[in-house]
Image 1 (tube, rainbow, N blue to C red):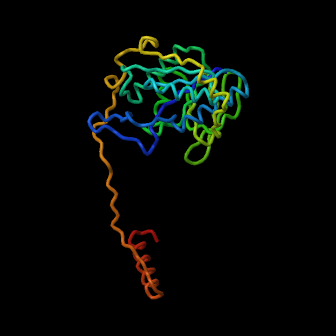
Image 2 (image 1 turned 90 degrees about the vertical axis):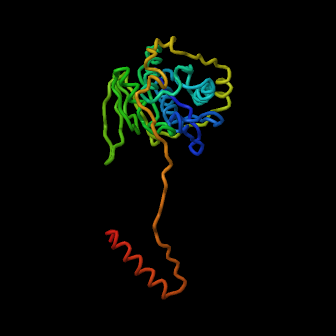
Image 3 (image 1 turned 180 degrees about the vertical axis):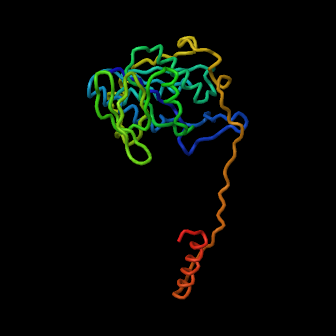
Length: 265
């Protein structure tokens, strides 16, 4: 089975900052990591390779330093990887990002399965995976927590939904987005780290993937962040700090009165 795993470099959650003028994420000076939810997609791809054979290729769009993310994916068990990097890609929304990734997958050509993380922790949309499948015109399923069975031309998967699980059969080639319940990502071994350092990662630009320039970057993105604001959290509560038995009884009465006023009890 030939598997493609799109991954993304993101800033650590507590370091996410937005540019109030452009509405894009500030990445300069922030140490990036592989999107934590993409680690589960990498692991599932490697597990499938170990189970039935094949190869796993990591794919990422970003600045040149995203090569480090691809090498980490190789250290976890991927066979190789490709970086999509060009100034023309900068500022892309989920629509433009999924377009670029789909064009790269079209160039790769021979694939059976695309596995994505559920979402990225910076944008938190969960749109890129389904977007890739839509551009490629292939079936997809989201929130997969188990690959139940591998058949000749299809997969049987278990999908998490609000009130339980669904069992689906999906024809290949297809795309899955996986949740963290699907596996436990492994730590890279020393041998794999040494191997990853030796592998040269090809870098593709718009011409390499025959991309339509009108679909690229900030100018090719139909969505815009028009305003950024920090929500103000206000609590008009009352702190009860009883210091003796009589005050405890009075505090309980006040609490009951408060809950009744909110129609909680």
